[in-house]
Length: 209
Image 1 (cartoon, rainbow, N blue to C red):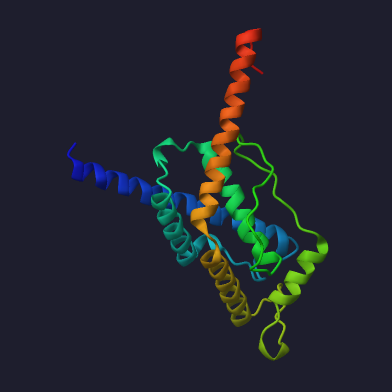
Image 2: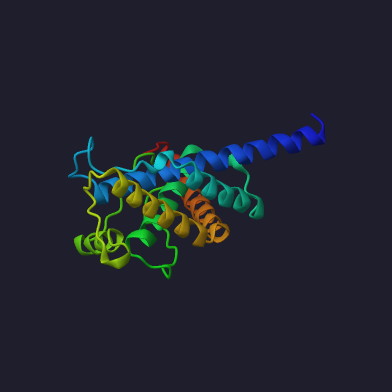
């Protein structure tokens, strides 16, 4: 394979992985939003936005991830499914945390979760935090309030536009370069420690947990 073809293939793989990771993060974000706001609604009539279909959000996040992969020289071929899910959980929660707490000052913090799982329990917010978010989110200009359970077509569109705009604003604000590097470093460190522990157990006891 010539150098030109190799570079093209690497570029394609980075683009593919960035988009795949972005879609997974948005899917997780969608699950957070529905669990926070829409459990009690009539899904056939009430407002129920599916941000999984908002390609603009996916593309925005994918571009930031792709640039971060390049800037940090991350080897996507070496990233396994566990690592990918670890990234998804950390970034999705950071985004939803900034959204729900309505603060641009929140600093990124790693979640205290295992590195070798595919299914994780969602992080939670207090009833007060959720209620405050709903009150602010449903309020529009001139003190107009659109209830989350609205069935009016125009009102549903206004809520969707506001939610999408809010997500876009948060995604644009995050320092993806720094966050992705912190997550990758933490994952690699935890994996090295875990592998070392397993090797010691095998050496001394001839067994693995």
